[in-house]
Image 1 (cartoon, rainbow, N blue to C red):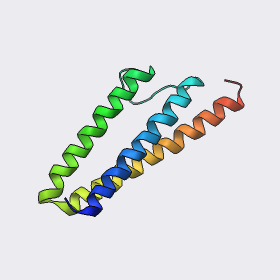
Image 2 (tube, rainbow, N blue to C red; image 1 turned 180 degrees about the horizontal axis):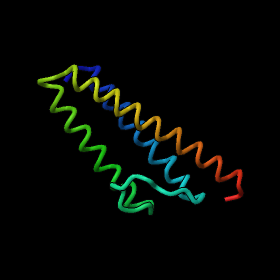
Image 3 (tube, rainbow, N blue to C red; image 1 turned 45 degrees about the vertical axis):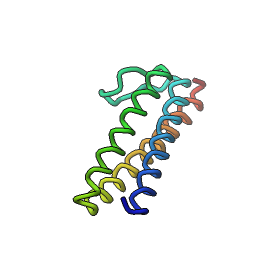
Image 4 (tube, rainbow, N blue to C red; image 1 turned 90 degrees about the vertical axis):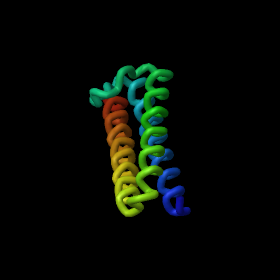
Length: 102
């Protein structure tokens, strides 16, 4: 695997970690999860689900990068962007809940 792909996968995992962290902070202020694939908003199961999803993303993108490196890079950028956007949304929702006294 080329060095750039390793860096992209690391960035993706960090972006997902930020998404998980901001989600948990939001839950503590009364936010809800709209993703139907999420089974629990309790911290331990939520983190476990995110870790499994992250491991699956890394595994699949790593496999894809051997035969289709351009596709793997593009999908990595997409994953990083979507996790980052989710984190920003979580921060906005949490700030609005805090402003309302939650």
